[in-house]
Amino acid sequence: MTPLRIIRRAQADTLIDEDGDVVALELLPGLSHAELRDFARRVPCRVSPGINESLGACSGLEGTID
Image 1 (spheres, helix red, strand yellow):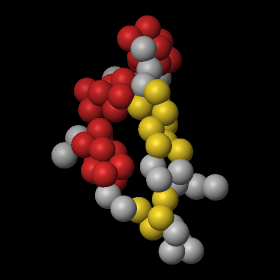
Image 2 (image 1 turned 135 degrees about the vertical axis):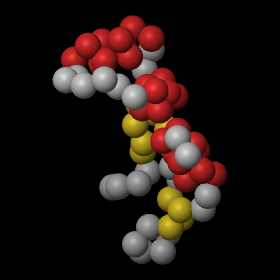
Image 3 (image 1 turned 45 degrees about the vertical axis):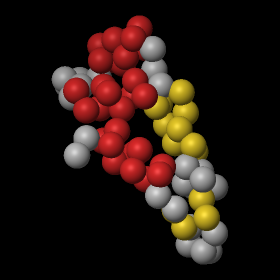
Image 4 (image 1 turned 180 degrees about the vertical axis):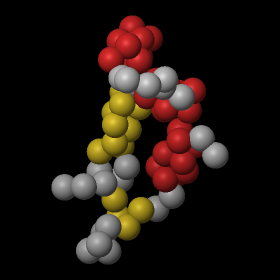
């Protein structure tokens, strides 16, 4: 399963925090093609296709930690 599919599955599930409250998982906007190229140039290793796909779909998550 790809990282993006894991994120999408978590977003579709009902998530419960340590206090028993439902948590809404919000995805931040994905990176543009130019931002993805810049990111790939700055990291010291090859960016896997799964991570590239994930970052293109969302650049982060909100709702999991306060």
